[in-house]
Length: 114
Length: 112
Image 1 (tube, rainbow over the protein chains, first blue to last red):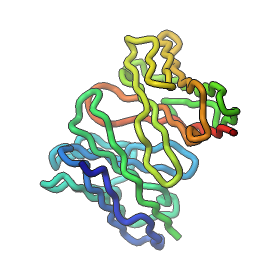
Image 2 (cartoon, each protein chain N blue to C red; image 1 turned 90 degrees about the vertical axis):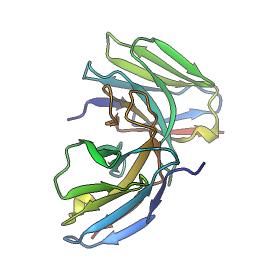
Image 3 (cartoon, rainbow over the protein chains, first blue to last red; image 1 turned 135 degrees about the vertical axis):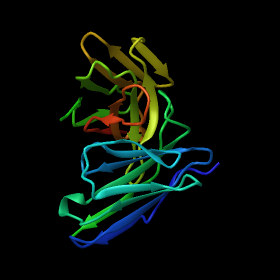
């Protein structure tokens, strides 16, 4: 059984650019959630995808968008990057959206916006 | 809006000590309270979780105490070891779905 993987590990972008981050879910998991973790803070929920459909969204602007593919891998896209978007982006996969379905986190992608 | 408040921000204990990390929540609809451990360069990993109908849960050296009336819960680490040095996050969730609300984290250092 493979864990959650994310790519790339690190990324440096310029303000105004666009970025795509990728996540490969744990085997058998059909749900993926994305979180933003600023330095020294707890993760903040961006959105969740369940079987390729968005299933909840946090307080993030529309320039944060996502996709989930039939193999349940996922992408996070951020347009018009701002300096405050610099953070660790985490994806977490789970068996479903059930009450206690555990979320397994990947190692994250460290995004730096200059 | 900070719905889960965590304290202290950092904690230093000697090996064998019992660090205690506290969290308070506002939303009484929360019904699932997990604790995560995060090492540098890694994603958070689930340690232990509790439901509000239980006042205490133990798993190995980790114990959650839950006080529903006070809207508070805490993590105790028994016989702490240097390998427990990490950042700990409490979190809360409401019903179905995956929106975990995290606390701000506690950086724990266990000295040999």
